[in-house]
Length: 484
Image 1 (tube, rainbow, N blue to C red):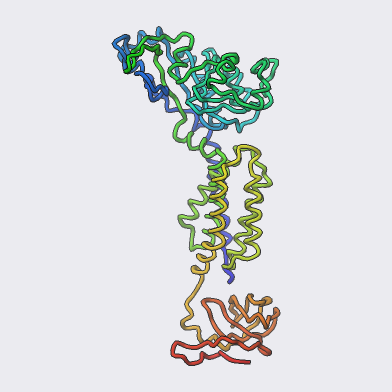
Image 2 (image 1 turned 90 degrees about the horizontal axis):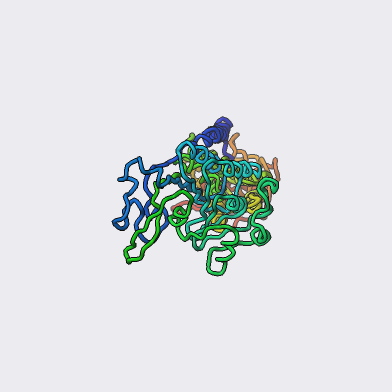
């Protein structure tokens, strides 16, 4: 079966994601410019505290909350901004952190705290050095708290913790696997001092076994964020009574939380390995699907959007570009057999290219095995079963009214061994013959039956005996059924 794909539609489907990806790249920087900053007193949920009320809730009868105390006493107690930084340090997140540091002095903050949970950076080493310099030169102290429990700071993120003023860790958090120092030693000194080798290849965890190591690194052991904020210089504290009657010190300061806007968060999420990879391959798959449907419909629009977002994410991550090419070629190979409606040689080639391109795509920060499993199973089901069945249904026609073709003579357009293509009355049809009598290209053939849209043919002379009896519904022999 030969189906025709409009070159105009193909051009539209390929150019649309490129245009969208360009627009996303232009707006990605501005997406992080605004934040969802809200001037609000800290709450137990926001600070990660599992015990005791926050200063905003009053705790015991001591003190006045920032919301009630008026603006005149806020500078005396301190003002702190907490910047939530979770995920890989990509361009969007790094830009956002730098913007909040730059705004800290204008906002008259006592301190700016980066709540960090990151396994590394996708930006260049030079970009991390710029961020470290911005933190070091800030007029407002920039502190980094690795939390909540279970959070980590790895790679370049771990090196930023080393230069924070101060750095801290939640209970159960870990810092390490920092790799070779990328911050200039002439400017930032030797990070981590005597335990540098340990943090270069391993972790330090904030647990009972590593308590002394955490202190030797100059990191604050702060179980929850409220404790870390309370230890910052210039931040007023007060005694509160928890529900179980225990007295506890808490910061008596104006604490606000900032995070990426919805648009910025979208771009930050898209730049994560699993999401970028899945969007990229889903987009390519939907583009192939759209080529074999009538008009440009929902699949084409969704596919173009997924492919554009996937291209943005892949471009923001450390990838092997030849592996990206392998993925594209894999879908081209899939399309060859989708064109015929039968998965054959090129489907196998496509699967090999798809597996190799997937496994070797990322230089680091590879997706989880679950992501790979979803992609492999989806590709197998789509191109071995789903897509060929869709194309056969899309381009098939009823056999009713085509009985006249039985007995017609035609010409083999390709070798039929046992499948191929024939021309009958100047129209091309997929054809099949008995394996015992292969037909060479250019030979004359006779149509002896029809199955769906596939013509059953035999050579003009010398056909093998057909053990099958082709009969009509009333039991009589169908015209063209013959024994030779």
